[in-house]
Image (tube, rainbow, N blue to C red; front, side, top):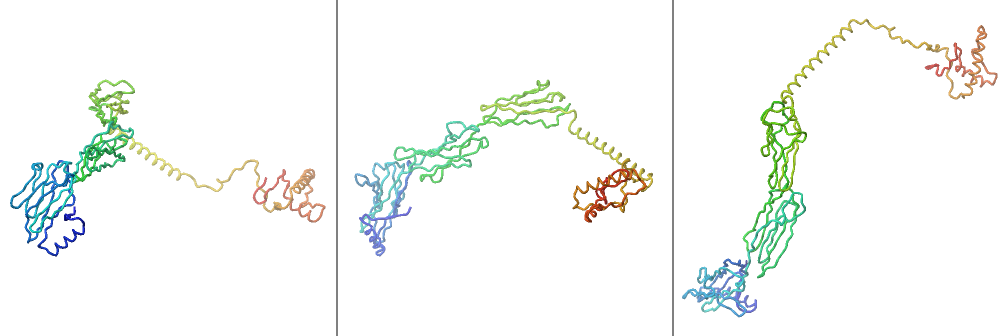
Length: 471
């Protein structure tokens, strides 16, 4: 707070003139310095400072404190260098000068209440200058009472949004600033309530949807207020209730006939803690020689083949009942023995396969050495009886031009069939090599080019391509 001083003269111009005169005259001035405002906490002590600066040519005759009331001014403390201090009866038990002197008129007021709110003036009387004074305003702060309470309903895992906790700053003056610090994705709701003597109560509710994964985490209520020297912080630990989370330990997958000292234990994480454990077998009756101790299923004898089956562990708390199934398989041998057997069988099979491959390799080599060299005649293809080789290339008719019409081919075939019948009756007469049609020269030329279509060679054959195919 910035110190201020003022003369008891009306108007700021007179104050400025007085300070200017003090600067000029120096030794003939006195000054009273007090804070402009003082905040007192209800029920605690407050210090009203008053520093007196008196010139060398002045003499302090008296310093005092007065309080401004609706009925007028009332003196609350007086210090005289010659006669000492004087305190009125109404303040004698809770007001005193801290260190009275000609330079210090500071007083301490104990157990401050709302009735102490007001304006206080420090006056200094000097000779021969007279009185100098300065005033300060006392304001009473009410420190809030801070506490945290749980919501009205229990926090259940998977439930709806609910009030997790409430942070309350009660009867503060001025109103306290209240907030929640958390890494959860909740929200805050602020409510204000006016109380007596100008105080205000603040409530901040934290709303969140509970989940078991944050069980044991903390929220922090933070309160800020002028009456507090620092932020007031209150942690609150979450208590989320959830059904048992079950885990079965003890079965390692290597249970075999004859194994001893085996057991399964049902472990549960629950809030509130689990109070009910039960072991049952689903596929048949529980075998003989098995004992249930709390959450442990204990085999008192060596394992047997019929111990294989499905076992269930049931756990319950005040929230719900949960279970966990375990399928047990008892082998004839241990896992180490089974691994050894597999290794031996693999080695035997590998050796047999290697011997087989070596035998095949030897047989192939010996057979190749005894076999005679292959002759060219071995590759002659035995054709079907109906197959006859095509005539020599020089005796084949030329190919049909692409532009010849199919009707011309059919007419020529009929003509050739007639010639074929004639050859059968008279074989001594050779057929004409190239029959010529009694038409124009162009028609005779086309006929000569179509002679390849029909040919007598024991039966009719039509050559489709004289270079590659024949029928």
